[in-house]
Image (cartoon, rainbow, N blue to C red; front, side, top):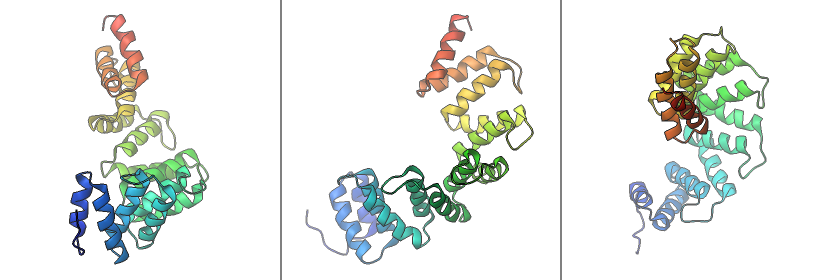
Length: 231
């Protein structure tokens, strides 16, 4: 395939979506050299995942950081994740938090959720359930399932809030409705133990079954137990 230069970002994305990563790479590199923000971000994606190239976290981080400095919230979040996980760089929770904060300030739900988790688990900051709750709420309000589930956990355990099984159930239901396995499993436990709901083994079994279908082993174990008991 010969390329007419001056290929557009859309053509690069189209090639990428077809799985023609070589063409996509050529187009994105050309556009990145002309300072196209989205093209630079897409190069980060290509190197991070090893699409048509050898996976290279260092290169991915270089591209993401260029665009993160330009203010692209998705790139700021990705840089945060790479520092969080120590991918292509020495693990650094404080740096991760800095980048999550930049993306969260732009209202980016995944960054708000991850920021909540840093405070929830005390990674790079003093553990603070109240601040965790604040960030989870901002993210959950945008429908982000991980934050919805984690808010449910805070209410179920009474961390940074008064223990409230009804509120926990509400948040687990929102995340479970979007197919989040952990929430389906935890909701199953609530019906199994009668926490914030009337005890209902049939409903618990149904929820454990859903979690099991998604690959949650504890869901399978509990489903089996209830099945053997005739529910």
